[in-house]
Amino acid sequence: MKKHNFSAGPCILAPEVLQGAAAAVENFAGMDLSLIEISHRDKKFVAVMDEAIALSKELMGLDESYEVLFLQGGASLQFAMVPYNLLKQGGKAGYTVTGTWAKKAAEEAKLFGQVEVLGSSADKNFNYIPKGYTVGDDLDYFHCTSNNTIFGTQMKDFPSTHVPLVCDMSSDIFSRQLDFTQFDLIYAGAQKNLGPAGATLVAVKKDVLGKTGRTIPSMLDYQTHIDGESMFNTPPVFSVYTSLLTLRWMKAQGGLAAMEKHNAEKAALLYAEIDRNALFYGTAAKEDRSDMNACFLLHDEAHSEQFNTLWKEAGIVGINGHRSVGGYRASMYNALPLESVQVLVDVMQHLEKTI
Ligand SMILES: *Cc1c(COP(=O)(O)O)cnc(C)c1O
Image 1: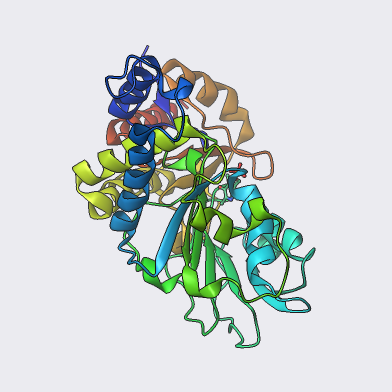
Image 2 (image 1 turned 45 degrees about the vertical axis):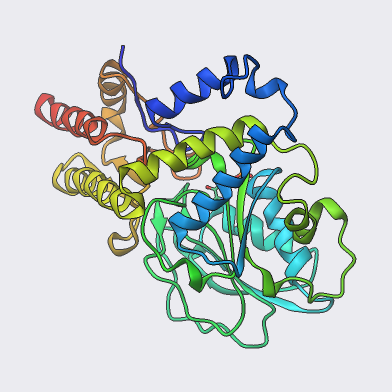
């Protein structure tokens, strides 16, 4: 049965990406060897890494003042690597606390120096994006989370700062057009819009590095990976290759302009139904709603059994909300077709008619 995969991450990838990845596991680049049993130093794999880096930069419109890296340890390791590399001894960093991941990032930074929380939405269970704060010039950097995967809120614009701007884009990287040059460091675990878990994309403006006076263990030092061209140690070859296939797929679809248009259509369709259908309500403030993760609840819990049966029968998977919000969360990453959102909307309307 055809599944409609709304999983929050790891998540849906394009069918041609999955086919290409499967084929390369058996026979990579006509070598009669598997992608996962050859040396990562083989020139055919080095070409994969080079193209993945070049395409990432191209899609984000980043010039040679930036380096793109494919690292390991997930976005969670970036919570520590960012302060390790950017926070001076005795220095201070600014953080927004807009969800579970943002909170973890801020907590981790406290191991390295002072953290000033500049905007928090903890007072309303993270259902909005704080605005109107000022990012002081005394900070070593300012960190924000562009999309709050668990609570379904998304920053639509970013503060202008005189200090380096760092952003966790794990759950909306490559989903929309942005001026990526406003950021000095961007990171994202691959498994939400790019590929399988294992690789973490980092884009860093070179001139923000090397200013802390800290001695950094080599694996945690961005400079090590810049010098090693993301091959300082064995990279996660399968994740990098599959990410490359997604990058090629995005480019072929028309790049980030096309991704944004498609994602906006899907989000508009689902939010319109959440707002129209009297059985449901959305949890995030309307102006801050995420185009990637839509969180919604039933007004009357008594209908949940029937709703759950209906969506499961329709082939929908992965829409149970995170335990900290409850209800439902439909994640609509780049590769999710509009048709899948229509199936969910149809189920919501069906429920309405039967009640
Ligand atoms: C999923 C997620 C993370 C954690 O990613 P890992 O790669 O599992 O460490 C961090 N930040 C955001 C915004 C996420 O959605």
